[in-house]
Image 1 (cartoon, rainbow, N blue to C red):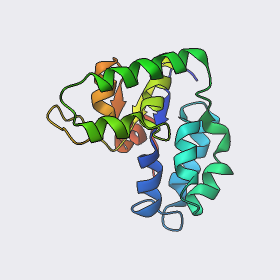
Image 2: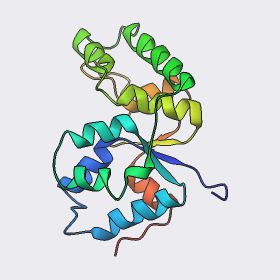
Image 3: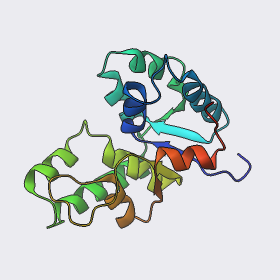
Length: 168
């Protein structure tokens, strides 16, 4: 990987891109670049994100389970599970967030704590559209969790710049 960081993508990176500004029929180079950089080991995601995407039963789901399937890393290892358990326990002890936010974060189908747990164990930079918010109560943003666990977090555009991906 030649010292390049590994970017670990949240579901919203894929979902928002496919439904809006990087739709498959408008910007196919975005999707090709993700595959190219995944093949080079610079981009991954986790199986829990793939599961979220697969519930969409759309073009993105087909792409994720086809062309990009190899880039989804397993969260089924003892270190990730231990960190996941720690992160969920941490979230439940935060007075900042309301009960609904804590319950949503702890749902087994929610990929967010798995994503941060994987990054905390394996290293890398989490990529999400969520932003850090020290005052939010109704949701537990990924960047807030990353901050608590010393995991670097960025957005799609900074990832594209870092990987020198040009979509034009």
